[in-house]
Image 1 (cartoon, one colour):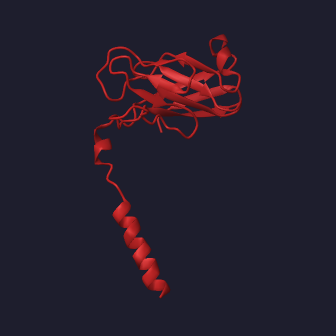
Image 2: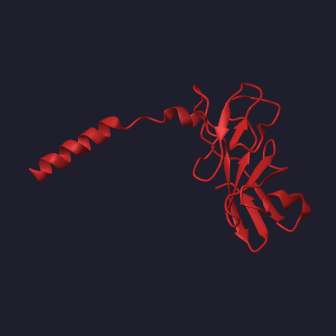
Image 3: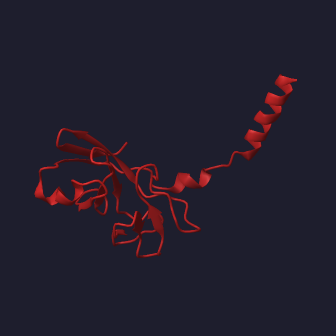
Length: 141
């Protein structure tokens, strides 16, 4: 009886799986390797939890966010769904906005640049941030 129940639930789980073929057309990652120091006056706003700065680099610039004082995350400001010539904007409200098509993307720990606008499936490009002392290394995964 237990085997039949497990097989039944396994079958149900497989039926509920969705395809993510649409994500194959998304830009997954861009080559990036930025090293900067938190002692740099340009990064003063990123020293506090919840703080952020915009850096040059990446495709259209990089948004660097301080999660909790010791963890950092970074996103490329390239609009993921459109060939937009301007970078996405950030106003501190945990969303990047593409001005060309009005799409918005959630940013923050565990959010991963997920689209917040209906009809958009490609996420914003997230970069890995490694902290070693006061040095930050921002790189693609």
